Length: 318
Image (cartoon, rainbow, N blue to C red):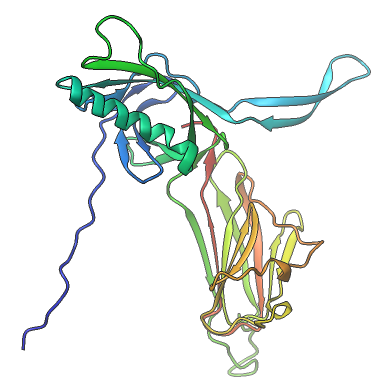
């Protein structure tokens, strides 16, 4: 008897954006993703809109505000460097086969930027020929005005867009993932003295390939009654005690997610477990650039208990 199956729907592939030479960036392809998820290729000159390389700024290293203290023997000593929000300036050309096509394009591209003030940030995506991709969340600031010159505004015009970025650092599109899972428990005396992995999932070294610190997200899968996360090089740690909640210890397959920036602890049903952390001594530590030794300990762990650590490396430049 024939079986009736649902049709297989192949997801739409994002358009291939040709790379071009971009000031402060080099050879790359740029795409803008508006808050609705629509992708706008910005370096494909065969389209009716594309970014102009001349006049681009703000894609390089982040800017900083320096705080210093006078030194008794002259000069000053740096106390703190505070990264500032990034501002990107980029001219965009829009055209059309006739006035109405141009008008539709002009309104569409402009709205793709301005809607970030109402619906949340858009994303500027820079892709290299080797396949690596870095992204930056952006908000429209100003600049979607025509040149106001003779012959503009009929079938073509250009605008100098200013984009404002809360976080000045570029984020790797591909997350780094560390998984540690408890193995099957063993009898301590059979066939010879052994130590089970049911309590400590082990010390490991996590490598952050980025330029600046990152704030990871953790997912704990039960069974577990107490979870301790320690950064071995500093001694910073935090403890999650599920028994401090009305739910009690994590059962097999149950999950809780811990975000370190901003601090958040959510059980799988969405309930808030932030009170289960060992405040006020809890330190939701970050991962600096390079290698960092860390350890995870799960009390009450059995086969299937696991910890997953995820983060996106962050970079100074695109």
